[in-house]
Length: 125
Image (cartoon, rainbow, N blue to C red; front, side, top):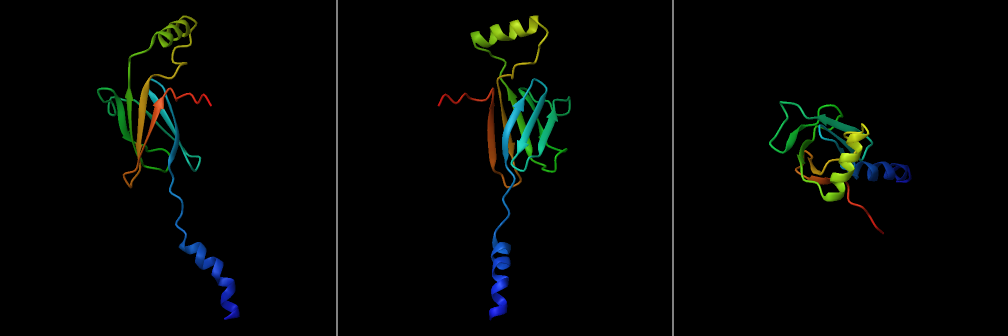
């Protein structure tokens, strides 16, 4: 019995399920999305003619070890302040420097969905 005590931690560790990888952050441009996963992997996808949808693009991440489905929906509307900044940035050659209005939806193999907004909400606290 004394010899089995050393095995107890290994038995407990074997019963603990590994943590699932989940998306934790998304960065969006007009033609590219980058999603950071909880294990540090960065999954990216570009808008192409094959992935294009009426409001953005969609598909499955192929380049990061996590074949999760994604869907990008862009919203072309801007508020007055955004319109001013887009105009100024465009005049000085920084087109694409501001994140577009949109939403990134990521679904894992178990059907769990995470939704990220662009630009990210501001935490005023």
